[in-house]
Image 1 (spheres, protein in one colour):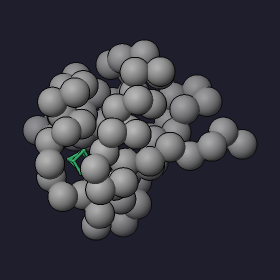
Image 2 (cartoon, rainbow, N blue to C red):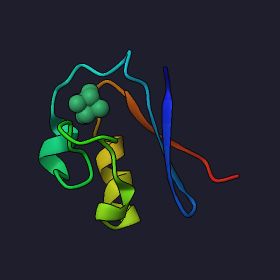
Image 3 (cartoon, rainbow, N blue to C red):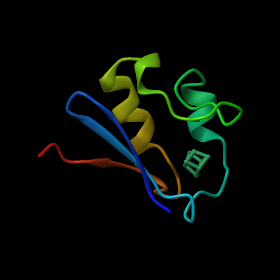
Length: 69
Ligand code: SF4
């Protein structure tokens, strides 16, 4: 099931079926992407631009950005 996480105009989409558990996101921004926490994504833990860049670095595209509006 696809999940969405929002912070102001930023929406991060996570598709668990695509996640290959590479850990790229958790290593890059461990406070935002913490698999041991529920929910594991917390967008309040860093600035939006940094989160956007980390989402783009997801190798499987399990993480993606939803256009505002
Ligand atoms: S970077 Fe992408 S594929 Fe890797 S653990 Fe995070 S969501 Fe999953």
